[in-house]
Image 1 (cartoon, rainbow, N blue to C red):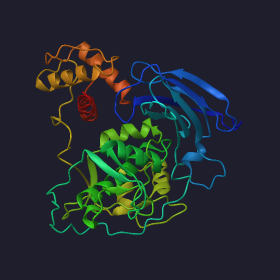
Image 2: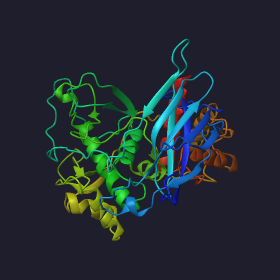
Image 3: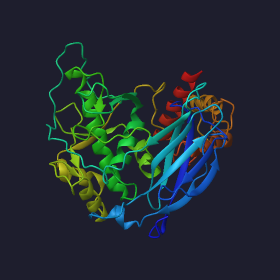
Image 4: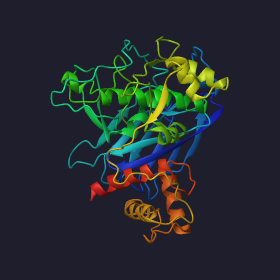
Amino acid sequence: MNPTYLDKGDLQIFVTAGESPQPVPGARVRVTDPANGSVLEELTTDSSGQTPFVELPAPPMELSVVESTPEQRPYAVYNVTVSAEGYQTLHIGGVELLPAGRSIQRAAMPAASAGGFNVRNILLAPHALWGEPSSRPPEEEVKPLPEPEGLVVLPEPVIPEFIVVHAGRPEDTSAQNYWVPFKDYIKNVACSEIYSTWRTEAIKANVLAILSFTLNRVYTEWYRGKGYNFTVTNSTAFDQSYSHGRTIFEEISVIVDDLFTTYVTREGIAQPLFTQYCDGRRTQCEGLSQWGSQALAEQGWEAMNILRKYYGAEIYLKSAEKVEGVPLSYGGEVLSLGSEGEAVRTIQTQLNRIAENFPAIPKTPADGIYGPATQAAVMEFQKIFHLPQTGSVDFAAWYEISNVFVAVSEMS
């Protein structure tokens, strides 16, 4: 390993049966150094399909928090090989690790085929701040809405269940379309576009810009109105950086869980603002500067003030009132020890169903009483799905439990 890698970060591999949430326990995981192929860690997944977090070398913190033109990549990359009986062996290259951070690499293992070549190689794209810079042309912040030719203009923005991501330029008919859960898409883009080592307020400002950009594409039917069958592309000549299967940084993931229904808008418009942004170092634009937002956060600026600097003092934040794909809406009350009622019973019922696939989650009677057993089940769920382990069910935990419940129920 590079001798300058004196800092450390933590890496976990989360192994599932294909793109489903079904965990693969007992999978064998090997982490190697791409520079020389040396084996750094050999691990086995637990009943939740996860390895423990392992500490690995990472570059100096200053490379990823201070705007400069470093010759050294500000994050470490590792190769990961995953094998399990009945599945194709995965070789994943380019797994990213930042100092003092926690990286989660999903390994979606396809089923083995009889007589086939059961090895799959995946090379993850480099981070957008290190790889090719975006070259998006400027667009209007407020878009014309689609003509009523079979398209429905919603009265208010709705958080969609899925984003259909076209992996290429819009006109490339050979490019694959991915159906990606909305939150997963936002996490992927945010982890592709910014570093988890940044100040929390800078991460929040960037996540809100990414959310608003995405929801503007959704609300205005930008591509479907042009005759395409997708929501957004992953081409940074048009949209945001999205790398299917990329490493997710836990610090960014937690912020997305809290903010994913929130967007930037202005008085007098129904749509989320089209919040253009660029890295601010290699490319310049009229919207948010990513490196500029980090510099302002280092000076103590809050996320809203950062956004107002770039998009105007009159902007404000609004939350979507509806989230598609969630069976029951969040009532607004944080559920914790001593809570009672139907909302508690709902959480207990959903966790018991999830526990059939993730047996580390203890089952509890669905009696509508939030006691120590329910708290323990919630904490284990939060641990597995990388939420703060509070033992209470707030906005973020409610929707994550609901999302996983829907996913595992559809597998039945």
